Length: 378
Ligand code: B12
Image 1 (spheres, rainbow, N blue to C red):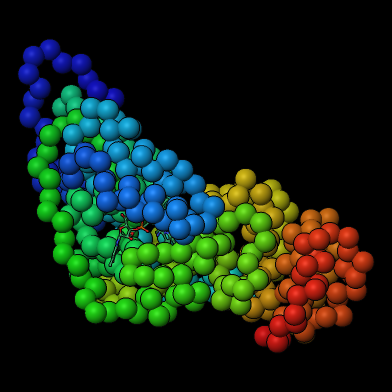
Image 2 (image 1 turned 90 degrees about the vertical axis):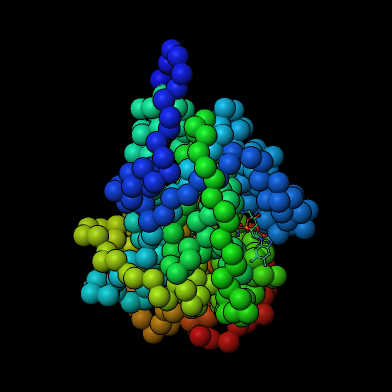
């Protein structure tokens, strides 16, 4: 990206100029941090891995020494220009999808990361036009975004681990431009949670085990993305969610004050809820066309169906013929993972009669599910 220069480099754009450019392209906040090693975060990543709190997550945990060192991504980096882009949208007035519906977390109603990349792209261009190197990292395993934002003075770490912007809360996605330009760094923002601990007590699975510390083994936002069987002890807590979980943010007082922007017109913005039966009836290609931008293990649509079966067990109706047909279909399918989750859903809806379909099932996952103690019907 760098232009080649003879002679002295021109002064880089000022932080205020970069902020104006970012805001003109959709950013809500912009700040600058020094491109130093995130030493505290490096320790946190190693510690949490050692305690098993990362579950099987890779992301920034795969290589903590890399994800906490901006210079691994841009060896000449001197500064991080960090941007935040708000994603709270007003869905009132958007027509409801058919019941039973599966709820989708706000950060994926639309592709906010694309909008963030676009805005940071304008900031990066302003730097590279002046002859500086500029590399954009958004939600990339190579950098811990919240720590970059914290160091850039954009906000404080909430007890739910999210980064909150003063007066505005945490409904923001975060990303950085790494640059060799030397820019004045911001001061960190002071804690704003005080004695409030609503997120800790409201987490459906008790996944916030200490202020600021998430146990991914119990965080619904991770469990819907994780491989394999959905842990039986957290299926009721999943409720009607099928992707992501916003509970610790919904209950957060500063988040309630942030102004909601209207949803943008068009399909993606309507993606706050998904008709569960349609999802369970759809073919692979249609599912991936609709939800392929989500993080799904190995891009296998079976994980969307697994989550939908659990949600259907929680919010479906056992006297509904379409529900009975869908469960019958998945009890008879050739994927043992889905047969097992269909067993759970059928039982939870009081449809034990359907279990004859798997009475002689040879698969250990299905047999384990059948052997589990009955749950009280929903
Ligand atoms: C892995 C990951 C996850 C994992 C693990 C989350 C986690 N807490 O680490 C899972 C899948 C569970 C997840 C869920 C979500 N995620 Co996520 N995720 C990431 C990812 C890829 C890496 C995060 C990471 O490295 N964590 C490492 C650990 C060490 O960091 P941490 O948990 O934040 O810990 C900090 C605090 O503990 C703090 N700290 C230490 N001691 C103390 C003490 C006190 C008292 C306090 C308050 C804090 C504190 O320091 C630590 C950092 O050094 C980033 C993208 C990226 N490349 O950075 C997005 C990211 C963090 N996720 C994001 C989002 C939007 C979400 C969800 C809201 C999505 C949803 N609705 O389902 C949830 C929120 C769950 C939560 N409460 O954290 C945003 C967060 C934006 C923001 N404003 O904070 C990010 C930054 C993506 C982005 N680029 O915008 N995510």
